[in-house]
Image (cartoon, rainbow, N blue to C red):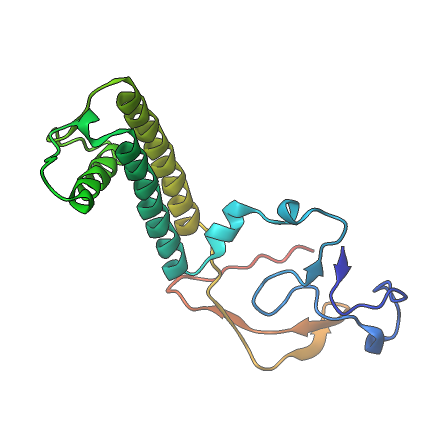
Length: 192
């Protein structure tokens, strides 16, 4: 791993601060590291990517996934044959039949199953069983992602604009002030 903007001659351990290659941690908290020699997919953690997304993007991805999965399964139900779904009004247009297949897919994916439409035949029943399993697993993963997003610790700290080098014990120390935004008591224990 190499710091972005760092020259190959600078090891980062020199005595000249002007040869510094850049921040190791960016101001937003992300690492300023360029990963080389790895396959692109090995550099991505899907879990951390979804955890760190802004809330609106995360919700949009979940919504698009839900709509797309139901569309795929509705297309498969329609391809197998609408006559294999009991309770669908076959007198309507093709779009109306597909819409009914889509809403049956949504009921099966969420395992609600209102009972108005039910599968008949081996392949339709098999497809409904596979869809229910994928739906259960998808909701379990989404629940884990929601929990990961809510339980992610966030530091609400405000740093002072000024720093001070002052005597500390038998030496000198860099002193700054920090305070929490939240209504909590900040406790710090110094180890000697």
